[in-house]
Amino acid sequence: MKHFLYNWAIPRSLRNAAVKDVGQRSAIGRFGGWLSIVVNFLLFAAKLLVGLLINSIALIADSIHSLSDVSTSIIVIIGYRISKKPADSRHPFGHQRAEYVATLVIAVLLAVAGVEFIKSSWNRVLHPQLSVVTSGVLVFVLLTILIKAWLGGLANYLGQRIDSATLRADALHHYTDSVSSILVLVAIVGSRLGYPFLDGAGGVAVGIMLIWAGITIAKEAADSLLGRAPSPECIAEIKEICMGIDEVSNIHDTIVHSYGDQKFISVHVEVDQKNSSLKAHEIATKVERELARRLNAYAVVHVDPIDLESPELLALKKSIDEFVSKSNEIREIHDLRIIKKEDHKKIFFDIVPVRKGLENCRELNDCQTLKQLIQQDFHDFEIKIHIDRMYTYN
Ligand SMILES: [Zn+2]
Ligand SMILES: [Zn+2]
Ligand SMILES: [Zn+2]
Image (cartoon, rainbow, N blue to C red; front, top):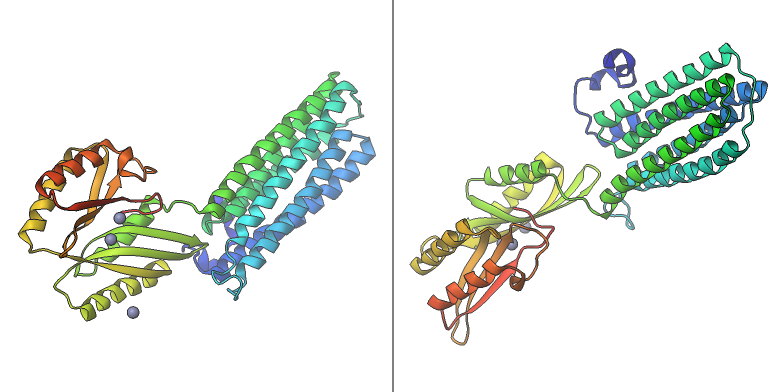
């Protein structure tokens, strides 16, 4: 069914493949936008004409709603056009986040339309205005409902194919439109059966739906604009790629920024400290290249030398790991170092807390206990513990 109804909108060569190319994504996104402009404009003209002919205020209001949809679709297209623009000196990360800005604008317009709808509908509850309705009009409204549902399905399908929040937002909008037209249908039938207030009541319900849709869409766009957490799959993939390099024994403190399909990654890789700095640089470069090749990412790799021989360090690591394995508050530790200088002796390490958001050792009972425990064996040492931040992953 999907193939028959929607697949024609995707170029033949892309039908069975993931669409990742920026140019192709943008072409499909723009197509979705143009299609909804044309269909909504035709719906607007037809609804307005029929609405005026039979003097139905519900239908005229619905036609104005369709006209407002034309304007949101124009914003979708402008958003795609801007997001395709290459990076420039003022926007060195490219313009792909423009898509989220466009989505946010759609959401606001949707909510505003909802408020307007509630206002005018409440008027109609108080002062119902009966209109003459023929069976032909009912068939016409039914047809507009089906067209909108199909358009929503198509936008949703295209949105999934190119993983576009804007298109999925557009799809949700089309669906709410078809439900709002169902309410118009109910209102018209109700008027015909002698319950004219149904007209206004349906309008209020449609308005609430529009506001709800606007808030839902705005949230998703805002998440992407503010900087969304990378998915667990993304973090797992980064780890797999890094560990694929022989000399890397582990990774930690991964940070990911996404701009559309372009990623910026920084990661710490653990490497045997016996490697020369030349070799360590080689390893880091290898990891950076692999991340670039497989994830379309610009990566910066920080090398953490790991001491695999010092008995003192290994013993300390072992006792800390034992403590951590029993802790409910600490997931793991990394970057453990024992530093002995003439004047100052220090022990450093990072803690990955189970519950993210805590940033101070004082907030974690287990962190303080661990500190005291280490202090017993290393009383003339300063113990510096860093708690990993929200935005780092392991
Ligand atoms: Zn590190
Ligand atoms: Zn370099
Ligand atoms: Zn860390």
